[in-house]
Every structure is written in structure tokens, then in C-alpha cells.
Length: 324
Image (cartoon, helix red, strand yellow):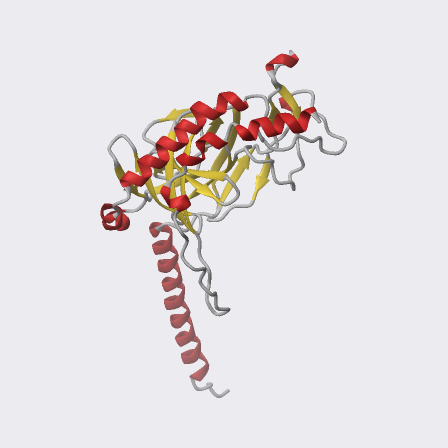
């Protein structure tokens, strides 16, 4: 009974803030369209979020989970993901609604958050032990191979899960479990993969993509290493929302691949200090232009040699036999 009363009291604290709901939430909705079986449905997702961590506020607009736009709140401009979307970003005139949503989101955190502290649990995903495995240290967990396309080899460490105990328990943060490689990590545990943006060819400029999925909340730091040394010059990290109250992030690094390269993308989830590392080494690279030219020349030479040998044999066998 006391638990039900505490939940009711928590909900009552939400009532004074209902009048702050954005106009877009309370406006009459358009009639639901009738979908035809021969049409393909698509999803446009407009998400604004705020949090106590960095970034404190953000906006993401995606189409079928592909990011189209973000928003620069300091400059009050919509930022296109690709140059082709620049005209669309400039024509949008909803900046006032975006800033209203931003203010509403921040007031919810500042006013409601402290009142509900300790009464509404924070969901960080379930914690479980895989059968027969409870590692005593991080050294007992080995990275595993994950398939990747375009051709590359990725070593990732998604099998680590850190549980954060409340401060009043007196138990420090420590590694408590791992989950099988075939299981999907719980929400909030980043999954990191690295691949090339274009087909791999040695000596030709390319771009490495560090893809981070299963991210919540959207606060992270991405660092690149080459041959286990820090690399500068990586592009900005793009964060976008996906279905299921989760986020994904992408970081890009321009490079020229070489046969002995070893690149790593280090993703740190700042809320709990969890770190995921994905390694990339070249594999199954496309043949270079020099190799193609050499192979083509060898094939041409063998063809010419075959023609000459064939002509010699024809002439030899057509000679009249000398009588004895």
C-alpha cells in the first residue's frame, strides 16, 4: 500500500507541468491515412533530448534511421548530414518550436527530476550472468570476431558489462558479468564496429567509419588510434535517435590504407565509464592498378606466345613427308 501511495504522489507532481506541453503535442491530429498493401511505409523521426551530461541538449531528425539533420543550438541553425540537404535545412521555419521544446525539456529535468529522485528507477538494462561464467577479472574476457562488410576484420569487446551500484550500498563499481556472444547487450551498452566507407584498395584515400549502436543516454567520447598511438583529425561525432528510445553514433576518419595498418576506435560511455573498443585491419583488399596492369600484361604475353606456338605446330605438321 505504501508503494502505491508513493507512486501516486510521484504522479501528482507531474500534473503542474502538463500545461507546458508543446503546442505540437496538443494540436488536433490529422486523420489517419489509409495504408495500401502495395505501398511501403517509412518513418521520419524528429527527436529532441536534453540531459545532465554533454551534450546538454540535442535534436535529431532521421528517415528510416538514417540521419538527415541535427541542430546547432548556439547558432540557431539546422545542420544537414549531407551537402545535398542544405536547401531543405535553410527552408525549415520551425526554430521557435524547437527552442520551445528545448526549454520544456530542460524545465522538466530541473523541476521534476529532483522531486522524483529515488522514486522512479532509472532503466539501464537488465543484468544477468551467462551460464557457468562469472569472470573474476577483465583479463578473463577475450575479444571475439564479428563478420563485417565491406571486407575487413573487426575485433570488438561487447561482452563486457559494468554494473553501477548505488552509493548507499557501499559496493564499488566493478565487473560483475559477461553475456554470451550470441546475446544482444542490454540497452545502454554500446556496440562498436569499424568498417571502410568505400571498397578497400591499398594506397587510395578512404574513410574509416566507427559505428556505435545500442547507445543510451547519448553521451560518449570517441577516440581513434593507429598502431596503438592516438590519431588526430577525426571528424565530428554524429548522434541520432532510433526506434526504441535508443541512439546511434558515427565517427569518421580519413586515411590511406596500407597492408600493415591496425586502427582502433575507442568509445567511452561517459555516464558509467564503460569502454568499447573495435579494431580494424585490412583484409581482402581489391587489387591495385599496378597489379592489375601486371596481370593483364602477363595474360597478353601468354596469349601471344600461345598463338606463335600454335602457328609453328601447324606449319610443322603440314610439311610434306620425305620419301625413303
